[in-house]
Length: 242
Image (cartoon, rainbow, N blue to C red):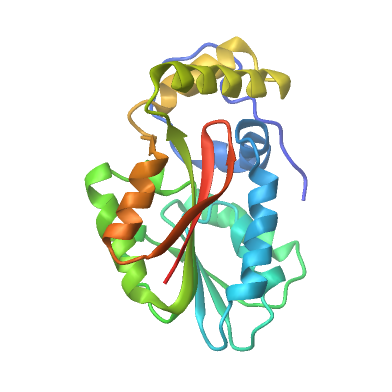
């Protein structure tokens, strides 16, 4: 697969909210690699978790699948028979690129693409559900309902994996993590203009929370085994086991 370079915010432009449109879909692989610390490791960990937690004749969900990296990771990691991976995204532009991406890799577990709002997606007979940098784009008041729906749709022993941008309760530490994240982007070739314009575009679109808020929410719907298993700067991944 050819990786197009992300130059969306390289020229001065009017501030418009960030959207997962055709322009973003075309450069998303490059964008997320250069913007999210530890992203490659998260995908590897999802593959490893799939090798442990995929159950026979069950469903695995990738909610907010973007270009299908987590779906492919689950497919590669799965060792159980009768597993289907259901990749859901509300952006047709992202799903079209996802279809091309998945077609470019050999994988044994079937992946079904569904265009839908994850809030309207039924979760059933699930051994794994992945929310990879997805919940942060959902209104905060709707998040607990989504997590409860996932919990109810998971089989005993099933897992929920969530990766999110987070904030810190200590203002000084929070600002430090923001600055270190910006430096991460600079080190990956983004200019000050690109960093500034991307941040403005994401304002009021991406709403991060405290790590503790995610843990508390998952515990409140019934998960008793919840923990962070990877964290780098202001990005964290958590696992919850039913």
